[in-house]
Length: 478
Image (cartoon, rainbow, N blue to C red; front, side, top):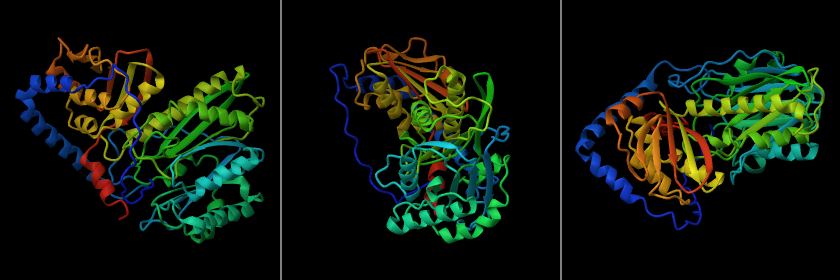
């Protein structure tokens, strides 16, 4: 996870309100008055639950990531990841961390492998992001031969020296693999503002590359972890014109996660044969509802990268168009892999104890619904209510109203799972505090809001906000 020094965030320019976007404070006040007699008891219980959730992060450390972090309660197991024809992986330790752990990943691809990528739109960016964007543009994504990833140093905000360090790593790998340096992709994660000690990486390349193997996906996922508490991987098989192809991917990310493509590091490979332009079209298409639909804390990184490689080593025919009918099953499986990885980022949100799905319907457009969903997902008040297992739907309504998007407060409805909290702008007649409290104890929650002005809808995923997030980020560099 890349972490810059704390800086004030730039204010977002609000979208214009429609006449229907009236203040929603009255609804929130109605809720507060109705539930006021129980307020003190709820707050006391919520604080106790939040303290318990913070303490659970002092348990046994997870492998490869930051020492002292217990495995997330929302963790999912690493799936079986069989080899992808034309892909070899190896890991090693360059000493970019104080403690003993792998911190370098090298991937080698078969000749003719195509590549597509999407990257952070962060204003600062990083040397490896600049490198990949430049060389993918020059090559058109054709014949990419290697990828080098390091954890422990973002090599961002390092100027010309950082760019030179990145180039030297690519050059050293190119010499070992007998290819051009522009055929080597790069990615980094770690502390912002620290120059990459490239000599540490290049000195270990002979040892690392001797370990290249096709079945090292689990090791690769662990090597790129930072504050992650579990390795993240996904796998699927699809058919193209009757031939079976494989898709495998790994990702890292736990904090500094917000929708802006991409919001982490993710590397996906397939043995299908897909032209670069078609591959790029697929990445741009499916990233919208996957990696761009998750958020942990509303912050985006300088190093976010998603790269998709197609080795062409299967028996399936080469595909030149993203819309080719023969790609139908592949498209569905690719989107599934990307969504699986994206949701794992949220499950591993720093200090998180809840995995939350937020769906907005009845908006004027999908874009409007998306903005409302993101506002709900990133509200500290909403997220702490999740942490305290408090079904405070007034906070949901507050976040909906401050998204500065068209809504009809007289028609707003809110559901937690199958339980109605509000209907038509007021407390639901069948609202049950006991049932709501029981539902909020679940690890996975669903919140649905209809804003009553149209047919636009959007879904995003987030997590709760606990004391664990503060603990992890308060001493990130130590």
